[in-house]
Amino acid sequence: MTVQRSLIIGGAISLFFLALATLSLLWVPHEVTSLAIANRLQGPSATYLLGTDQFGRDILSLLMVGAQTSIAVAVAAIGIGAGVGVPLGLLAATQHGRFGDELIMRGNDLIFAFPALVIAILITATYGPSAFNAILAIGIFNIPVFARVTRAGALPIWTLDYILAARVAGKSKLRISLEHILPNILNLIIVQATIQFSLGILAEAALSYVGLGAQPPTPSWGRMLAEAQTMIYTHPMLAILPGACIMALVLGLNLAGDGLRDQLDPRLERTLK
Amino acid sequence: MLSYFLNRVLAMILSLAVASVVIFCLIEVIPGDPASFMLGLNATDEAVANLRAELGLDGGLLTRYLAWVGGMVQGEFGLSYTYRVPVADLIQDRLAVSLPLAIYALILSTALAIPVGVLATAKRGAWPDLGVMAAAQIGIAIPNFWFAMLLVLLFAIKLQWVSAGGFAGWDSFGAGLASLTLPAFALALPQAAILARVLRSALLETLEQDYIRTARAKGLSRRRTLWRHALRNAGIPVMTILGLQFSFLLAGAIIIENVFFLPGLGRLIFQGITQRDLIVVESVTMLLVFAVILVTFLVDLAYAALDPRLRR
Image (tube, rainbow over all chains, first blue to last red; front, side, top):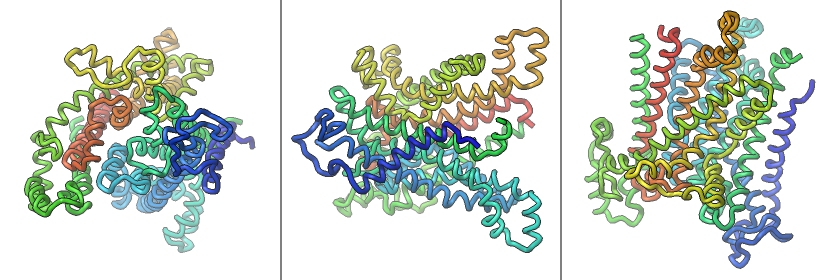
């Protein structure tokens, strides 16, 4: 079995940012909370590898901690989405064709009908902007995605003989769902999680760009872009770097997701041979 | 056909009803007392009581909800607390920027995506195809507000072809359109790349069908087969994406307006949030949700028009 090229490239990019974010937990070149106006807007140098912003903060350090913010928000949002969505999808599959299934799926459609960003704005408007509310808002919109994928994956498995055997043996629907269905659809869920990861990064960036995400002094890529906007005439690099990071990470995650899907889907492999 | 239509209308009304309840609860029920929220911590009891009376908060929840929905149906959104003007007027002014922007972007994106998607299909495996596929990957990954900044950097600052932001107004149609051009491109280009990719895969699937072989066998040229037969049948997945894209464009427009300092709905909603003007936030949100649900409904109808099988 050969490893998909897009998985290697995408995985490498994603791991790079993950490593950067992890490193920032332990060490950054310069403290990001200390403002040193005297050092403001410096070009790249040995001390400040990527230069400094208008508050004299080291841009490399900001980008590193920004990666940490983006990744933390997106991962937590996936936690909410998968944590609620996967059980809902499994439940819907056991209720297939009955009221419970119908209720769950129509509820999903309804959440889909909302423009995600607008509801995120609404939540942050009432509860005040914070990283936590951004997670909540993005997480809610991950729920129907995971529920749908889980249900769609689980339904065909419920018709297989070994599931029938398990039922005859007296296993409950809950046990079958957890012991037989879930392990079989884990691939699907992991691939979906990669896609939601990249969408979460984009959503977090958009929310913090309009001031509804992580609040100062916590650095985030979206806020760096918002702060750079007034400086764009004189210091375009301030606006280019954080955006390039967002794009690179999202691209990496998407490539990894595509590659992972092809890798994990045995049917596709057969057609390729 | 009639039952399909009624079914869709019912679904739309149901979605609107649930959406309005959710928005109402989020804004008026969960935060506690909206009047004290809007006035902040230092408000006197008298001021809060006055605002409560003005907002009609002394009535029961159901009465307030029905009054809100009833007002909206008649185009009455209440009075903005900060601007002291009817919210309906504010929305009308801002809509004159946001709606043309979203439509402009939708037209641009479709107009770009269809020829590009067809080209990629016709040249499958060759460089135009690979270019479209690569552009689509980037289109998905690029945050549109950052792309907007890059466009400003290039066209407004370096080349100085257009102004970097602001809105010239509709007094002169040309000037109004010109100030929306860069924002519309910023919204449309990434979406066009995605749309072209969807169109390409839909076309490739359609080209496998028997009737395409028949069309070719009866002597129709490749080009005519592609444009006449395949494109129409690839319409369903493309319509789905177009419908989805409209909500992306609308939400995207809210953000993009901040990059270009456009006085649209997005600016209105963010001003509403910072000034704690819940009436404005509530109404604008409902309006945006309404627009998205309406477009979904229209897309469902368009399906039926494109594919007669769905009418049953």
